[in-house]
Amino acid sequence: MTAEDATDATPSAESATVVTTRADLEAVVGAARAAPIVAVDAEGNGLFAYRARLCTVQLAWREGDLTR
Image (cartoon, rainbow, N blue to C red):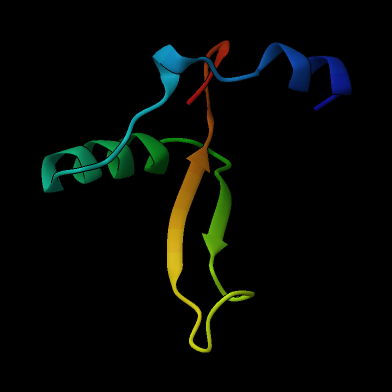
């Protein structure tokens, strides 16, 4: 992927999904499994607490001309 491709693939609010139910999770996992490559970003609070906690996990993959 070139830098230009990365710019064109910037996700929009329409392509973002907040997972709040099991059905949401199943839909996201199904879509991500169909992608050849999935990027993962995990956020935690390890700098601010004795025991780190996972706070957010973000996934991204290409679907045609969109980044999900």
